[in-house]
Length: 106
Image 1 (cartoon, rainbow, N blue to C red):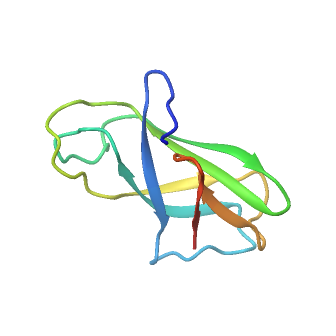
Image 2: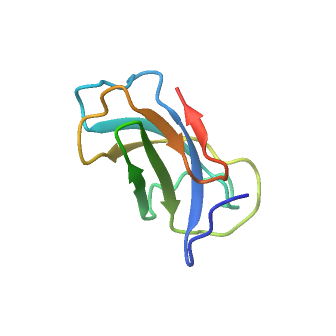
């Protein structure tokens, strides 16, 4: 099941292997892939937002929203994106909450 947000599409993400998570940092580097049809174009000219749905001592649940573009449905390329957390990551689990149940990202 995918999360729906009125007027937005979502993107699934993985952690950027070139910039591994730093437990002391409150910023995560991810590679996000838009799920809606966008003619195979990354959203460089559209608004992208990261929503941190929940931050507990054990986990961080994140959804990345993308302003929809429309178009044909070839696969879309991943794009780099920064997610700001309220506090340093520490040893918390990172969850992609764009789907239910959320998927752990390592």
